[in-house]
Each structure stands twice: as C-alpha cells, then as structure tokens.
Amino acid sequence: MPIKKILIVDDSATERHFMGEILTGQGFDVSFAEDGESGVKKAKADKPDLVLMDVVMPGLNGFQATRAITHDDETKHIPVIICTTKGQETDKVWGMRQGAKDYLVKPVNGADLLSKIAALG
Image (cartoon, rainbow, N blue to C red; front, top):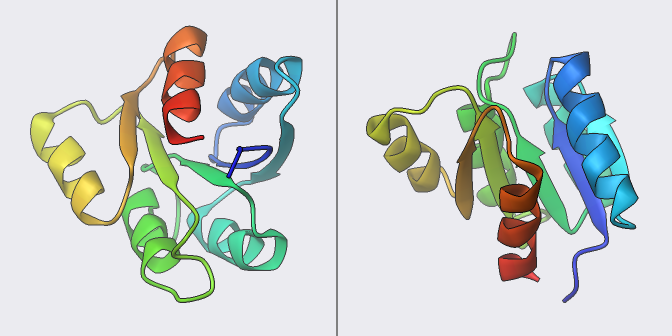
C-alpha cells in the first residue's frame, strides 16, 4: 500500500516543522503529535500509513509509544520509523525490538528519510 498519510510524533516544534516541510514538499499528507501518548491516540484515530517517532519525550517515550502502536490490533499494521538523537547501536536494537521498521539518527537527512519511506511503500 503506498504511503500517503504520515504522523510525526516529536516534542520538538523545530523537528516537527523540519520533517513536515520535507514531507509536504513531496506531496505527503502530514499530521503531528507532541508526545508519545497523543501519538498513540492519533495513530488509532487517524490510521496513518506511517509514523515517524522521536524517542526522548516527556511522559510516554518513543520506545513505549512504538511498542503500544505495533502491538495493538488496531494499529499493528502501521509501520514506525524511529527518528532520534539516540544513536547507540543498543538504542537501535531496542527500537527495532519494540516493533520499529527502521531507525534514523537526528539530524535527519531529508534524502535518507525519503529513501526509507520509499523502501516501505
């Protein structure tokens, strides 16, 4: 199924804006959530084709939110790409174990992001 609707979950307004600009410029329909808890709710309500998930956020962190999305029958079909400053190999392995399909380290390169999205589509 082609990816059209993307939910960006990030507590940084700068990151949301940056990734949103890249994606809307490529014709994607982008929505936003500012923390893990609202990201999980929005994923259930809006059923996006992809979730881009930050890790370090107040409340429910990105690893917990990814696990919630990928283990729930309503949302487990939605792929999650983690986009975070946490660049250690252990972080990447842990993120993938939570159900993420891919992992990008910030600062996110626009071409890398688009290529990872294309690989899922």
